[in-house]
Image (cartoon, rainbow, N blue to C red; front, side, top):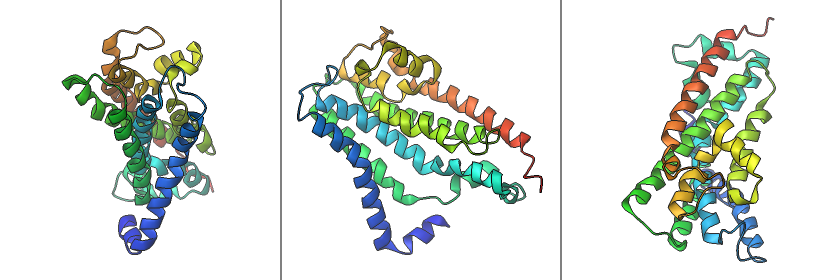
Length: 254
């Protein structure tokens, strides 16, 4: 329904998509400006940073396209409109994911993918079949990890109904952090996004293997291939949290 509504005004859709593409690209413009004053950032060249940026931006774009509207759960809990979803013969999660579906968000996906392709083509990568396969795996697994974070944030809003920004700090805030090399961050922070909230598996761990660089924590090389397993674990935990939150829902009480 939302896609048909959007495509009813194709010129408006094209402009909104381009605006989304341009707005999301401003982050990379800032990185390019930064490299006007230095040749390397944390030991990484512009092309290598572009790989990091493109991978996480594409993954977040895919997750945001499919599940970005889950942050509206808190508003529905507060005004009681979640009750409407509960009485329909469709899973609540599917309705929440489809609520106000914004196809214009493909602009972020295409912008991130453009930068990723340029970075991989420009960086000095010693390609192998394994690295070539790891690139799409990295992007898709990263999208699943970000999706799990979106769902976990939505589940948290059943307990704290006005906490959308908490989830945003891990999704959009995590995306901003992952755009830069891990070498510019403190080791404790890197440990946190590896072992606590495993955002490092969105792009840092697999991208370091693709670029032929050691990770900051000295982990074995096979850890670069753990992204799908981390994504699966994140989905399982997020689904448990969503189910628990939905069971605890008691409407507004009015």
